[in-house]
Structures are given as C-alpha cells and as structure tokens.
Image 1 (cartoon, one colour):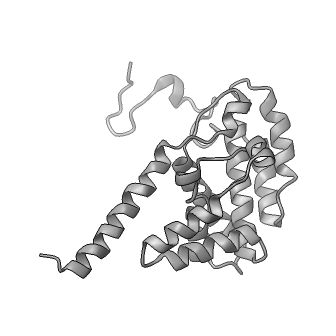
Image 2: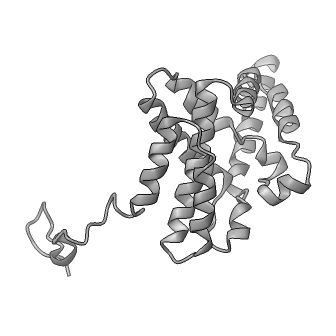
Length: 207
C-alpha cells in the first residue's frame, strides 16, 4: 500500500505519463500547408532526439545526455498548445512557454524540464544550437521524404530550412540529407537479392 504522500507523487507521475502520450495524437500542422504527409509531435520528438544524438557525436564538446534530453522536451508544451506552424506563429501568440511552466509545476522533476526548454529557446549554448539544428534537420528529412514522392513544393521548403542551420555539423548533415535518397539505408537496386530474394538462412528463393 502506498502512503498518501507517496500516492500523490505517483499520481503526478501517472498524469505526466498520460499527458506525454497525447503528443502521439497531436499532428504537426506544417504538413497541412505542404499538402502531403502526416506526422505527430511524438514522432517528431523521437526523431529529433536521434538526430540530436548524432550531432552531439559529431561535436565532442557537447554533452550528449543533455542534448538528447533537450531534444525530447523541446516541444513538450505542444501537447497543451498544439503545434504552431510558421503561419500560425506569424499571426498568433504561441503560449508554449506558459504551458511548459505549468507542466514543470506538476511534477517533482519539472525544474529540469523547464531549464532544458528555456535553454533550447535561447539558443546560446552549444547543446541548444545542436538541438535547434536537429529540429530543422528532422523537418528537412520529413520534407525530403515528401519530395521523392512527388511533392514539388518540398524542394523549395528544404532550401529555406537549410539556411536556418547554424552549426558546422548540422550544415554538413543537412547537405547529406538532400543528396541521399531516404530509402538508401535499405534499398539498393544493384543488389541482386531484390530480384532473387534468396534466404540467407535457408538457401532457397522466396516467391
């Protein structure tokens, strides 16, 4: 049995678990204007964290642990405010900072979340710059996926996003993302396996 004080603490944790799940149901609204594709805020956060870790590896001076945490929390407020694309941001007031402050007050570890969020917003530290670049690179990768499917607007949007990159590692990775096909990690037309489909373990061809 949990004592009242401990029970209240775990109730806070439970609320946090349910709130962070809403990000998987919150759409990224920039794709509405692109005209194709779909992505949730949760998908964006996960992928941004993977890219941020990659950039931190390329920049040894950076604190990788901090970079990944910052990437995971940089849009946490959008569960409450929804995602605001560039049109919304130009004409509407983005209350994400206020939302993150409220989240920070709801859990014992909220101070760390708020500090990471504010550091990323200010973009002064190396870690914050890497995370911001990771945020843009995730957008570029998403756009590239839509471009190869035939969305002609995506190429122009990619060129704008590339200009937002600040770090050397971010710029180099951005260039590579544009030059490489999104399927290159798994598909090679010259690989005879895609024709023969020979099972390496059993030694026979699949139909």
